[in-house]
Image (cartoon, rainbow, N blue to C red; front, side, top):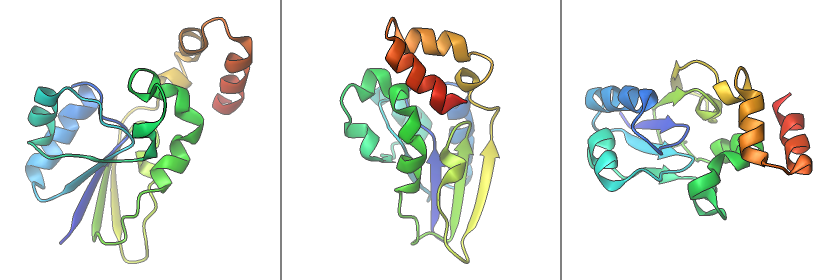
Length: 147
């Protein structure tokens, strides 16, 4: 059975990465996908057991390493860009968009759904102020996409 494992993004060793570590220990043959992977090498070794994640086009966007959340409005498009037709089972670990990955007929999709994106809900104001700084235009655009 071919298994694809997909997580929103790989940047730090936090709670979602603990889930990733456990799932990959159960399914060591799974191939890993993520919108971006900017984890430090040693963290990646610990979390992904030496696997390299296949990333989306967001990996190569300007300033993505430091400000990947700026691209929030196109996260759904990026997650849908993965071609996972070759896999029998898709496992997603999602608190943002990974659960929106496209699956084909006959494929199974199991989602470990974390709590929602806190910066889109209960921390929205803090996120917008931090992300947009003093740019009212950018803050307005992000408010439009988050509401």
